[in-house]
Length: 399
Ligand code: HEM
Image (cartoon, rainbow, N blue to C red):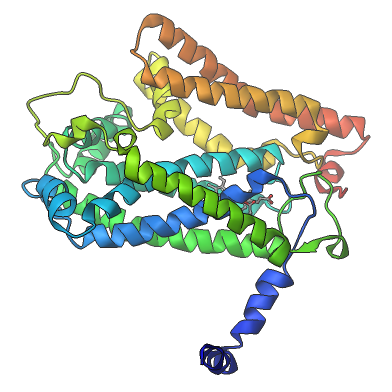
């Protein structure tokens, strides 16, 4: 019966051919390493975010008088399995961001942003920005103490732009001089409709590009199609195994460790008369937060963290030599380690109190973070010289 239904559908859609073309005839390099799975895990987590988000939006009320109760009372206590979907959504957001950082770190390690995958990388950076914005807007929706004060502090960052521009942006972001119903309604529309729509479009483009060009060979040498292996079943089954382990870990957090993702301060309703003692963004934004607060001038801090994002977009053009993979590039490997240490150190410093010594350390790791980007053209020039290649030739050489 089931087979007949499938055949009936296939006759009309040629779905079997489409699946064969995209999974069996799609060839990937031999010897893909474990970190290549982070892309697929991101896709799985994104799916969970969408499903749980749709269910939550059926009961959430975007109004300052009802938002808190609609989540903490209606969804958490009244709606069947409402608590489960909230847990999945809150834990999922953290897992999603962690996976994206790991996915980006993998792409940087293997230099997957280089020709011919520059566009895959740039679309990835747009996805990253969309994800940050989605997370920021979602954080404010529960209208607890942390949500509210997060919503108050965030507009202050672009608010540091001088000449009155910052104030206009901040007021626009808040929907007035104080966060209220207008802002909450807008944030909900952004978080639940506009941003997920843009994210979906961008992820589809990202996947089409990967499907067209294929993934980078971890050895750094591109192989011919005949030397590659079919994605299905050789890689797909391995990835399925990892997805199972991932689900086990994810459900462990969803059932037993939610205090990590739903801090107790946010179970207190928003109160604009009572500022919490410690307002810091979620862990995935701490490096930017630390860069911002380590630089004494607010506007310079704002420029610095935006520059980091701009440099991320420009990575394929800063690192222009055709040599790929940190495995073949000792100088790049050293700078990559510096990048990871700086990013981790800034994250840790972001959780600590803003003492003068922490500010100095923050400044130091901000400089080492920039050093990574500045070193890339220098490493590229040295590599090109070593191969006796002119710049243009060096960019396009195939190994
Ligand atoms: C929802 C978010 C994302 C999803 C679902 C996703 C999915 C994937 C998948 C399935 C692959 C192929 C396998 C792999 O290398 O893991 C991939 C590759 C890639 N992704 Fe993403 N990705 C996302 C976000 C990003 C971001 C934020 C960046 C960078 C800023 C990025 C950059 C890349 C690059 C450069 C490749 C090519 C890797 C290679 O050639 O080895 N992706 N992505």
